[in-house]
Length: 428
Image (cartoon, rainbow, N blue to C red):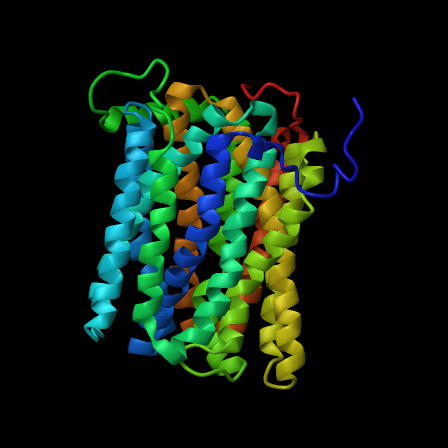
């Protein structure tokens, strides 16, 4: 069979032949922009109300706790109940909480604890929604096309991560936070419409009754028998916890690059740079389907991420001497990091989706979501506190160095992960 031209270069679009995947994917194009407006508006509003990166970092704690609790339990729910029903309920919950964000901003609230509480509730719905959605993917896309489908999903998500921050950075000083929250509320209806049109998605060999703690524990027990998957979680935690400086972006944009306190171009560009890199990586992701040594590929991608974050911190440290050139360098480093992270995530998610039994897939996806989304929230808290002590530049650069050291250490301690090949059995 003749390969299509540039199949190893440009993104593989064959998953879009599935009508259900195509509807969800197209709806995401609309929804993700609104979601990113809220992602940017929440830390920006916190910083505008408090003037403190430590409070911005505290959002990591308020996001992490419900993410862990409901991510793990939500995965267990996704292994028992019809997954379409769960998606409808959680998407509706996200719409309601986004509307409450709008309400507090429209009322002129400056209560940071109210904002943090709403954020925690939103993350609870998100934590159930995402593992359920990921567990659905192998039901609507052929197994061989999972890497391509994941790359397409991440490309859209990160494209919204570019448009959202750029729009938010420009509009916050003009129209305020409330309108951004309202846009997010309405765009979520696109995803709700796509979810409602899914067929029933019962779980094969699902356990009877409502799952409890034991179901979550069983998921971890299963994971212990999958050493390659276990290490894929560990290396991602290293990358995100030590190497994600996003909580520092409001302060860096304002102090180091001279932007206004509540938004501006530098602020928008910093938030958009990592997603921009992921989009570029996604557009040219045809190669991911042809990589056999996926373990080594993950190690290389995360090492590149760490080096990029180190370079970002160095650029910030030199901003007082060469503000505009160093802003360009800082953005390039974030773009390179975003491309590396996209490739790493595509490999790790595809390995998990193809290896797990359907009756356990939701729980393992719950662990995946906790790691992928929880790591950056731990990083928010860690970087916020560290920057208060040593400054934003040192916190960013030092974190990147720790990523490189950590992933190299893992390579030596668990060589089986580095040697893992696509054709290898995941069970040890």
